[in-house]
Length: 208
Image (tube, rainbow, N blue to C red; front, side):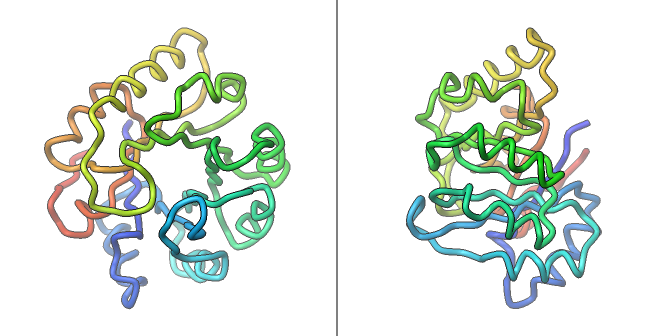
């Protein structure tokens, strides 16, 4: 079954608890939290203390997407604050295997993300090890962007590898998901759909 993970990047942060309640009431499966450091991506968002506060008001699993440089230095703090999934960018660290192993040691689900122009081959060795592969269908850093069409082929290739090798990872997509693009990413083989603007603006009605 397809899982839905609204991104609080597009939520009203002044009324975050109410926004989280909307996510729960909509029957969504995960809460996607974008952590940006102003270095790996130009934007700057929330840190571990806010994740800890979010954990206090919801039982939904927290899908923490680390758009930060050197994520290996932050894994422990986000795990301690309540992250259930920790996803780092393959482009942001020289020690990707170490990141995956540390996430597993922390008893969390391990995810690896790749930007639109990063080939699947960059994380080939990690595919048997991770729980989630997050395909960025826009360039990371801001919400409200349009899906980049060539990323659909990347989803298809990951789905083919998943079936051919019998790997257990789930394919997540993030960026530009709306009423027009949702059928495209689902057809390509997506397992987890991340949506920010379309969910919180009410432009997309989820039918699981």
